[in-house]
Image (cartoon, rainbow, N blue to C red; front, side, top):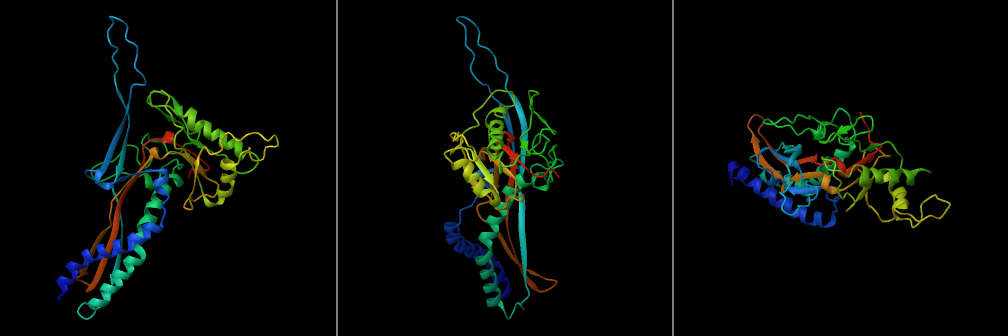
Length: 330
């Protein structure tokens, strides 16, 4: 076996080693991000970015009078959302002498991939997905919302599709296509004596106030609801959502929100007091089905180098399926 044969064969070997490690890993690992966002294959993106524009559909059909003409309806567009492909890669140099140490190089790379890659790829997805929330309230925008590519620069920069941060407070209103204004950010605690009342406030904002299309027509935003909290709020949210009676209420009143939300405990939420109500239809991720591997010789240093990575795109396509509280604004 010469050097060129060894190098050409390594990429295929690296894929094989990855899937050998991935199969048992995925059987034991329960990812969080598919619970709160829509996940699609990267192959659906043709080119360097995905583009979607919401059409404002007719809300209901008008009655046609006998002998009368059919009423015309002009469809109009909502906001355009762009999701760019982003590549996340690592590189590992192997500083063994090529001629003498082919077996050692191969074993090193194999063990490295089997021990690290499946978890590293899922951790990257988890972090990206959660950072849409962690940085969703930043007024000036954040890198995770940057969906610019070499051939496309969205006008909204590093903000959500309507040029406002994804989780906006009432002092930073966003305007719908029909001129109505909205906010989906709060500064309310999920703990303490007011915890249940604060949850009710968020629930009403989520399922009623913000449950409007861009033309102001109402829609059902009450299906498949989730509440996501950091580890620090796990027990508090369990009481609020799973108690038969309202927690902390001396009147023994029935808890109207019992079982209303699926609880998601996400340790990657960076603020211990933040929490969110959401539906997965509002957040989107495109992810490649398998990682990319390459193996080559650095001619200058005479070292072998292995690269491994994955391509992912994430973004918010509808702020109305999200209400967040206590997320940082800077």
